[in-house]
Image 1 (cartoon, rainbow, N blue to C red):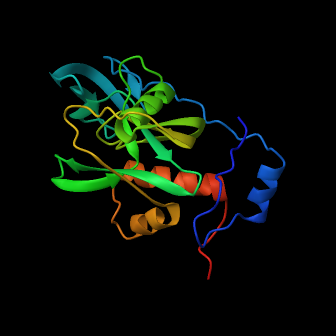
Image 2 (image 1 turned 90 degrees about the vertical axis):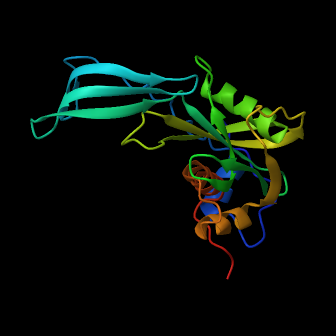
Amino acid sequence: MKRQGPGPLPPGLAFSPAIAAAYDGGVEAPVPQRPPKPRAAAPGQTRGPWRVLDTREVYRNPWIRVREDSVLRPDGRPGIYGVVEFEPAVGVVALGDDGAVYLVGQYRYPTDSYSWEIVTGYADAGEEPLAAAQRELREEAGLSAGSWTALGHIEISNSVTDQVGFLYLAQDLSAVRAAPDETEQLEVRRMPLGEALAQAQESAIFDGFSLAGLYRAWHYLRGDLRPAG
């Protein structure tokens, strides 16, 4: 995949010479490979220093599955480990030609907080992450993109859940009709990427998935750059 130039930079930001040269030379950008789906637990299985004795489903709904594993702990003593299973998550940093990023605001029930985030969502069962990212961008922000760059994956909260999140940079944007889920009440705003990064530093943007996406997009597109002055 060729690196796609981001258009004009946000005020106060500039390409490093190395990144500028890479764009000018049409350097091939590495595309992170999708990791395998986390292994399901099974009796007798070894998972690092843990050994699975038994596993059972505790709870399931259309979005999550909770299991409890009976285990031998790293110290050799018996114990339990609870795991929340999800389909993969996707996050999209949608960047306009003017260097502005699209953020989605919504109320988050578990934390009782209002949060400004990049476009995020879940893959449907069997849906590839890129297809899920394209769908979520349409549904939440009312946008389609002509250029997609994989920004790798993260493990969302790997002490309690097996969920993997896939991040993408979307460019060459066009407006389409939004179609949010019936459970979503969304606002969409645009702001310069530099301002979004400043808000991330100040914890005004605090969603972890969004922080990873914004910083990865910044480093991917701009290399080792710093605010002017």
